[in-house]
Length: 82
Figure 1: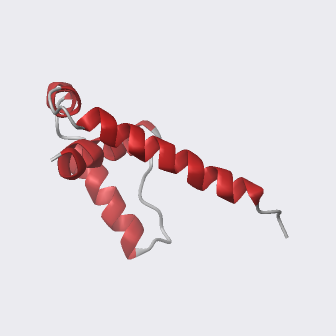
Figure 2: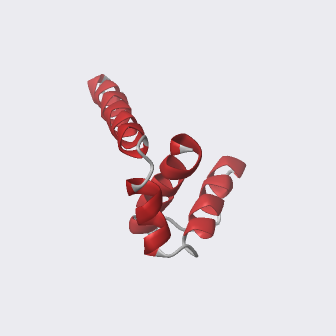
């Protein structure tokens, strides 16, 4: 449940904070990503908070996600622009 609920809601909340929205030119993958944010935006803060704090594995999953996001970004930063 930490991956299927806590991580999904965490990513959805971040996308809401970034105000990611529909675009005229899009892909199916991007539209699916937006669907997550659309579903989550209807959930109240208490539900989100409970998913993130009451699941004993949620914190570790968030940390794993953030660590891997940083690793991925570091790899991309190593590449020189062409």
